Amino acid sequence: MNKDIIEGSWAELKGKIKAKWGKLTDHDLDTINGDIERVIGKIQKKYGYARDRAKDELKDFQKSLKNKEKELN
Image (cartoon, rainbow, N blue to C red; front, side, top):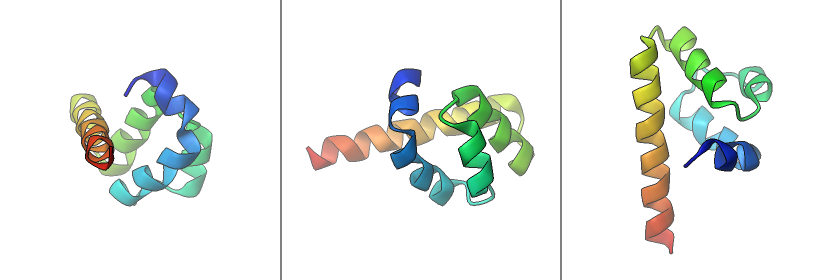
């Protein structure tokens, strides 16, 4: 999932992201507005992760979404 896809389907993804990272508030997600770098930064801040770990977690999350999408098709 690339940056354009995330930004384009942000409204749909917000719920999935909040389910995965419950410490992110609705306000956080509204201000992020699909910006991947901001997602990484918020995960880093809220969970105390190093930048690389937050980035890796987001990549894993994106992969899991792709796999679920493939299963549905």
